[in-house]
Length: 321
Image 1 (cartoon, helix red, strand yellow):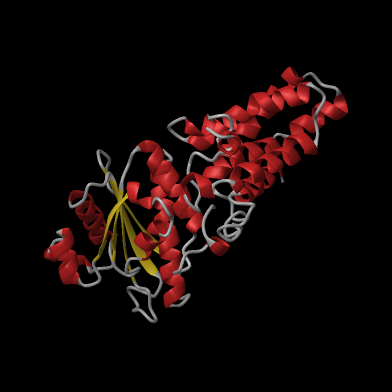
Image 2: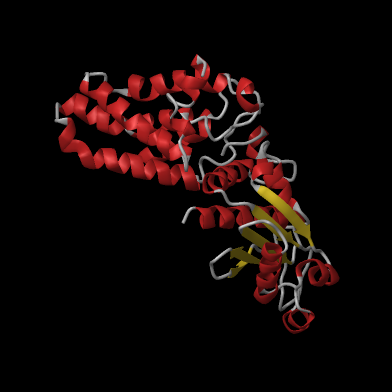
């Protein structure tokens, strides 16, 4: 392992499984403790040092696995964790308190940073620089740490259909860590969820297949949705979303499947307005979940993009349990 990879994986912490990002954050704690105990408290060792290390580590990611963000690179998590610990280090520096007396702050900084890094607060979404930028994958984790104190992906954090690539990358990281493959069953989004996932390089080891079943006939023949369910409930309904998700799971090698069926517009009806979208989530060994979201009359493109992002969020939530 060369020097760049040693930094990028934070001395091999990123090679641990599952959840390499969490291992990276955990490995950052004793180093931050040592720096603070040595009198190096403050923004420079907790933030600036992490940023500099991140620039070196992420700058060599092209030589690692191509121009994307493999899960092994955890120096961004390390830098973000150090920034999240800044208030604790600052408290030690200004009050002279014993590090052991501030143990609740260390635990809170670790737990909250990991939660924010997985779920991504609104401020972080879409803040990823263009692919190939020397800053690499640093900004989202730095913003996560900053949000705790007060998505990785392609250009602008969005894929070719406007989906949040940050969410897709996080989804792949979680699924890869748990060894779970994913399938999609889509109607109104027409394959946008599958496209968002596969827009991230290296997705082939996680994404199994996608079913685009736009017509009722396709739902029946490709996913096994009962014609009786379609006749009684209509295509935009939770029972149909349930059967779509379960059909995708049964007809694939995946352990987790999401389905999307809705009214993208323009226009709708009194009973099924524009922006109503039903989702299904089927997982091996778990009860299938369904839900309906009213996105409102935000236009066809807006409804489809919002549905794609919500489907990704459902998958992330399922893997985060």
